[in-house]
Amino acid sequence: MPAAFHVMNKSDSSEVSIGEELVGAIRFALVAIVLALSLLPLRVALSLGSFEQIFKQMLGGRPLPMVTAWTLYARHFLVVLSLVWPGAALATLAFPRTSVTSFYFLGVAGVGAIVQFLILYTALSLGLQDIFRGMMMGGTG
Image (cartoon, rainbow, N blue to C red; front, side, top):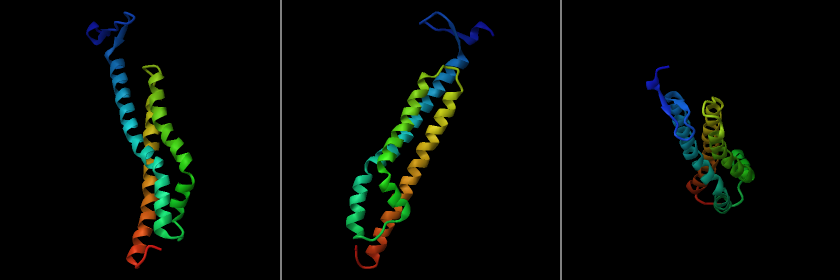
């Protein structure tokens, strides 16, 4: 490879190709994207206790949709799962610079965060729809 395509790494005086530098930069950008994506499910999972209180007050004992009930039941698991996605993304920074495995981990973490957010969104939306339906019928309970 021509010398123009190599840069000197100042820390250990070894040559690092521009391709390796590009892979590292892309991986770092993907880590930032996954961290941003994992913020939504984390915030929603942490607020599930408040949603549970709202549902109990506004529905007045009527049953919740199954997805909403499961989500509220599994809220501690969902909080832990919300911490797994950013943890997995940050763990990929410890992989070797040329490792393709880190991109697979980042893909799984990103998709996992999106799927978790969609499940939480659906579950909470169904509960809120029941509240609105009850209000339209003339009462909250």
